[in-house]
Length: 234
Figure 1: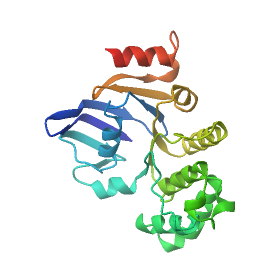
Figure 2: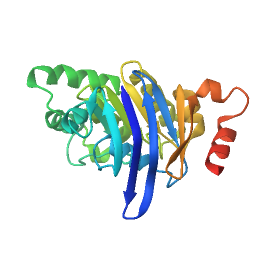
Figure 3: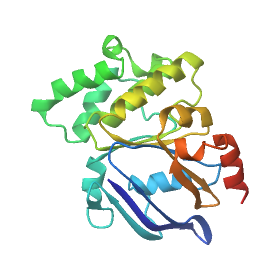
Figure 4: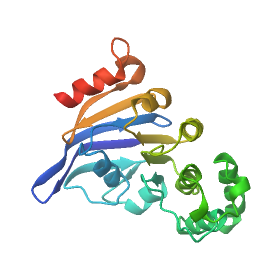
C-alpha cells in the first residue's frame, strides 16, 4: 500500500529526513513516534505531496509520487494537527465543499455525506457553524474531511492533541473503526495512544527510522516508553 525508499529532505543545507525507507501494508494502523524535530511531519508532508523530497521514492496505492501525484492525492486523506476548517461554514456546507474539491461525483455525494456524518458522530451537528464547535467536534469534522472521498490511506497528525479525556477516548474509538477499511498512519506524542490504537510503530529521531516493529513484539520485554527513550537516545 505504501512504499518509501531512501527518502531524504534537506532545507537548504540542513537535513530534516535522512535516507528513510519503510513499507506499510493494507489496513495497518501504524504509529509514527519521535521527539520534536525528528522529521515526522516533514515525512508526512512528503507522503501527501505537500512538499518535494530532496531524493528518494514514494509509492502509494500503486502510484508513484514523482509520476502520478494527482492520483496519490486522490487516495490520501490528511488531517494536520490543526483541522483546516472554514469557521463561517456549517459542518455540512464545509464537507460538501471539500467533497467537490476531492472530485466526489454528485451521484455519490449525498450518500457519502450521510455515511461520513454518521461515522464521525456529526449527524446532529451538520447544521452547526464550524466556528462555534468544541475542539473535540472540530477534530471530528477534520476527520470527516479527511475521509469524505473514501481514500485508501489516512494520515493523522496528533489527532487527539488538546482534547479532554472523554474526547480522546471517542476519537481513538473512531480511529480504530476507520482502520477496518483504511490504511492509517498516526503521528502522536502520546505513547499510550499508540499502544491502544496501533498494531505497529515506527520511531523516528534525527531524521532517521530508529525502530520499526509490531507493538506486541516490541513490548514483550520492555514498555513502549523504554523502547522510545532508547531509540531516540542512540
